[in-house]
Length: 307
Image (cartoon, rainbow, N blue to C red; front, side):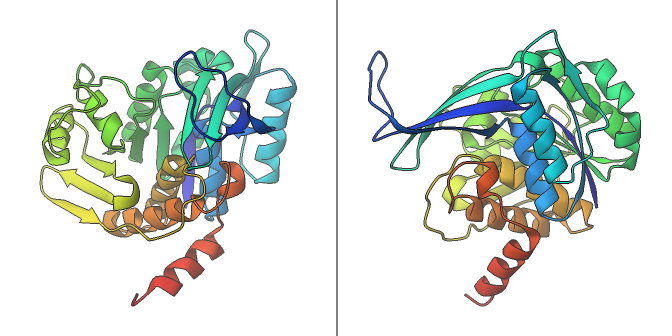
């Protein structure tokens, strides 16, 4: 049950407001705090808490934020043999505004993540070989993410690409991607369409499948997830919860999907468990503090049986 995260890290600087501000508007905020951020970092922590053996490949700055990240990885027992620490750029930083209705607004300065290159993937060849599943996202250069998918595919691994932040992928060959995991907005952007395109999720998935990826798992927020391939399509139901904070739910879903697939489960089983992990994430504030353990997810699923 080995997962290799091809990842990004950004120190998250967070503030709460009563509502998301409009363009040009100044609001008074409260509860300022610094926490861990970056999709790769989130995914690594969640996968580890779900029982996977996790290796992390990425780049951080040689600064206080970077050192905090290394400490976090040690606490979560995540392998950082192939984490590069650099003085060329500072550690990535994200500014996050959250409101009292569980909505958020996020701006990220990539910093050292922009230096993550194909050479770093080559150096991490051992982590690729040891993994059952490789999981990447797009807060790092897309060429690096796709190169990692290529190396993973060559080694016979399951490769997952979470196309977030959203980017048009129609000009790319995604034949090395086993599973593409956009949300509904990201799927439309990835298909080269406006984010509010009225095309159905199935039609969007057909466009994405033409890039060569093996299947598309579209997350649907509080409606669960839909799976599309050239052979079949099906939906996996969501789990009812009281949402406190949705930030990091997509990362939780992807990490749980990777960890469960790495454990030998079917795609349908893995998507269902990923839905559960993502739902539980929404019951707590922030990202890393909201990620539940394998035991907690097991207990949650057990409590929902027959419900």
